[in-house]
Figure (cartoon, rainbow, N blue to C red):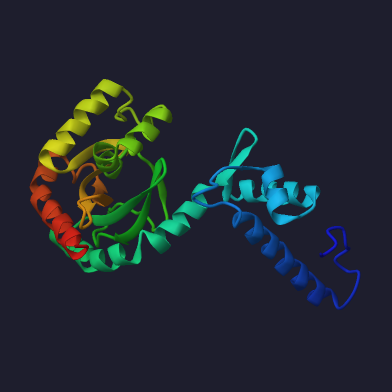
Length: 264
C-alpha cells in the first residue's frame, strides 16, 4: 500500500511524482465513494475505513475534502452521497431514454411558447435539471443542466410533491423554507395547491423560488404511469402571469404527454 506520509519530492522527477500522487489521491477518493450504494447509502468513517483498508487519518482527510466539495454530505456521524454527485448521476441515469425522447419536443415547446423549457428529475429531496432549451428572447430564465433546486419552491417541485408521497414527505421534513414572500410555507396551503395541480394536470409557481421568475410544469410518466420527471417552462414573471400560464397550459400538457408516449 502507498505510504500516506511519503513526501511528494521523495523520489523521481518532481512533475512525475506530483502527477502520480494526484492519481493516487483520485483513486482513493473513488475508492471511498464506491463504498456507498443503494444498500448502504449512509456510512460512518469507521465503516469506510473497514471497507477500504485505508489508514484512519487518510479516511478522515478525504472524507473532509469530499464534504467540502459537496461530493458527500455529513449528518452527525454518518456520511451520504452529496447533491453534486446526484446532479451528475441525474444527467447520466435519469436517463438517456428520457433525455433523447424529450430533446426535440422541448425545443418545440420553447418555439411555441417563446420561453425557456426544462426537464427535471427528482434526486431525493431536490430536483435536478437534466435538459434545457433556452428562450431566444432578450430577458429570459437562465438555468443550466445539473442545477439543483428545492422541491417546495417552483412548479416542477410541485409536480413531484403532488404525485410522489416520498417527495412530499421529504419537502415537509425540510421545513418548507421561504425563498421569497410568495413561497408557500403553510402545509394547508401547500395541500390545497397540490390538489389543484393534480386536478388540472399542471402546476404554476408565481415567483415562489426567486423574485421576478415564475414557472409552470406538467408530469412526465413511463409505461407504468409512474412519474419519471417534470417538463417545465421558466420565464420572467411579467411574461408568465396566471393568465399567460393558462394560455400556455395546453401546449405544455400536450408536449409532456408526447414525451411520455415516447417512454412507453
